[in-house]
Length: 304
Ligand code: NDP
Image (cartoon, rainbow, N blue to C red; front, top):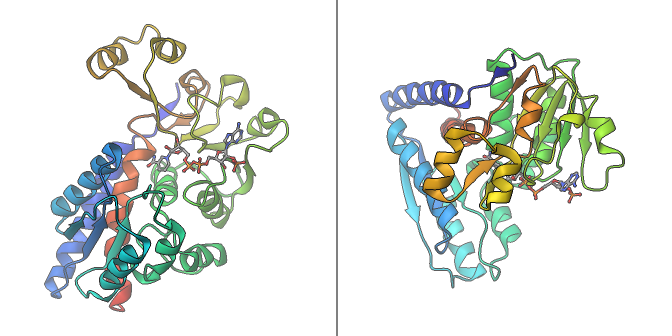
């Protein structure tokens, strides 16, 4: 039987550790603070930001939600970021993506003080990660490493195959796995004979954004499968492709009109040695790591 890597339990343990650090910092008169910038009214973004603000409250961090209208200009956003960079009560700045088309997202992310870049997207932090120097690491990749380590999955010497090369997930997780002494292969849409490569993986990370893309024939039996994908299925045909006969998901589909599937076909999980479920796996770590990064930023900025 494959082992289920329980994102909820690991995220809860990390949050508890963060709350303890926050209490210790309070004794020194420091309260880590997160500023979350949410532009416009994209439903998914609103939910993500609400969850992040709620996590701050639970763990004792302060939070400030700033919500410019979706007509905001790049210049106005740059001015807002400059104010947040200057505020001493702000340790972490989070700009929820995607931003409206008229805003230059890259210019904005580059304007965030690297010391407050709790998403780890600034080129300075990307460079530090590449060079193996201390910095702020993107939350989802950092969460993946926490899942593997806390579940006692060996990484050193293993062949880790990462499918996806985004700046947010694929590249940073590949770098973190390399720093943990895995032998890392990065694949993408131009990779030739992808199944031949994924079948070599002891650890297979799927960060593609395509429902059930990794099929059972692409997996080595006994491998550890890390599914980063979050894909919403809304049609009966899509539902039946992955979850026909699954009573629990059928109930969710009837109630909400959609269910979530990852980038790995759930049938492939049955062959694995261990896997992160969707939902309930990697996704839950992202907010926990954001909280950890904010506390880390607060400490680094004060030389603690
Ligand atoms: P991107 O769209 O930025 O990147 C997708 C990557 O997949 C690209 O590198 C692309 O290759 C590769 N890809 C696409 N099609 C294929 C193919 N046919 N064969 C091989 N590779 C392919 O996505 P993200 O990295 O931002 O996100 C990936 C998934 O993870 C999404 O489902 C997203 O929702 C989810 N996600 C989940 C998070 C969480 O908290 N759990 C956080 C962030 C993302 P190429 O570069 O050649 O185009």
